[in-house]
Length: 209
Image (cartoon, rainbow, N blue to C red; front, side, top):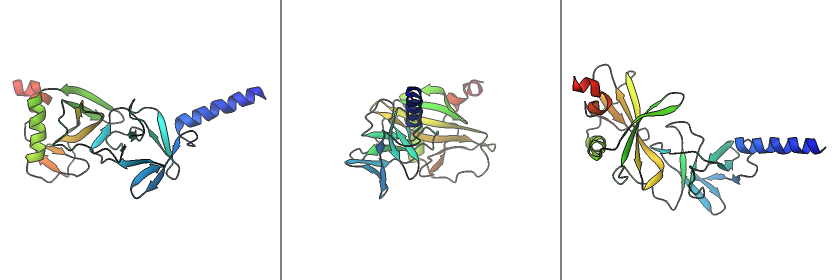
């Protein structure tokens, strides 16, 4: 009997880690576009925002069988995230928090990442002039139609600010066979063409030739 109790306890622990039943996790409700639990109220961020880390399971929404996790070591009463699914990962923040915009983020780093089954970063840009030029091109550039053909190369540009260690803000970089190069924001679908702005960073061998 003692052995059975131990096995059941072990199975319960595994179930908790997997979020399969929600036992021991904060129970969430979905109301008017918000996740709530008593005094806790979380708002979903747009897909422009992506968590920098996924920590321990914290909350569970039974109707959707959805487990939400702390963002790294951040306070889970303020920040939560879905299990990581690349750029499609939704983060949630307390309603008391106002997220920065592109104009107010003030990023110090831009990570150039490739995504397939997993996401991995190829290089990190810390040159303030380069970062400002990329954001300026996106914010001030004329809106364009996103090409319908398949891109020949694409990256996710993840902008990081030390003032906001919980998340990255993302743009999609894409190159096409006809020479067009675009930046697109996933949430708004805003697209601009940026020419060879990032060629010295992404293709240094070609630009040095």
